[in-house]
Length: 259
Image (cartoon, rainbow, N blue to C red; front, side, top):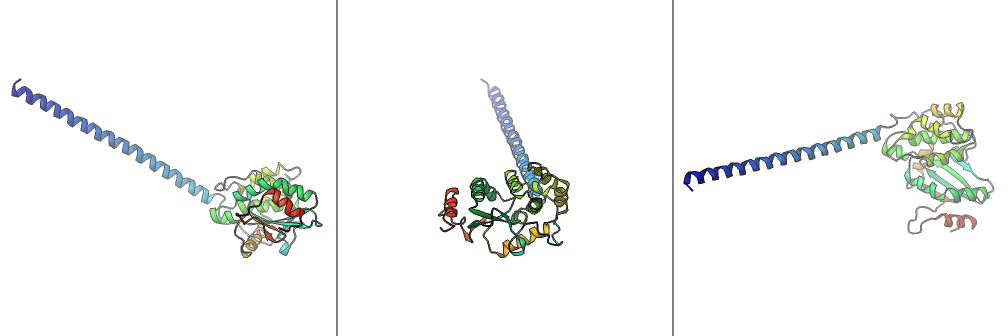
């Protein structure tokens, strides 16, 4: 083979190698652009979701009006809604936030036991409301749901509506309870609650200042968080080394709350 032919083949191989390197470089740039675009898209979506979660439910709610205590509320400043007979020997005090997922876990776990004990006359429950999730996550669902619960107490339908709210609790980052229409819609699940009077109470925020006063009492009480569960004044839910169970709660109540 002549030197000229060998030189021509070497040049062709070199051109082919250069072209292959260029193709690899182009493919690498293409993959980089695809990955970068995907990352930007994910970050942008996360930012949008964060803004939606933080801003759901609008701005600050008006809690400056007169404190309207719902009918039948008891205790200091009328901040507790009672369920059960006054003659019950044991009292369970529950501090809850309707947006609080751990509160829903408590309700789902203990609901049937508490209902059994109140129906038998052994236990009285006093419900108090806090609005911690509104403060932590933004929004107003804790406040509006608690106001709606107070409206249901005014209508004599509190126990059933309280349970409906927790059974239909949205995700913690979803401030769905800030929508008064949603709260009124859920009232349709309680016989006789979906009335014009209830809807007006919800839309007007009739008990907003009462809820705000309850939340302040929670903060002033130095409680660790929601739910806070006290049996005859003793915290029976905080000790995770000796956790409460439905069976243990039932035994404590039947033993007169001594544990």
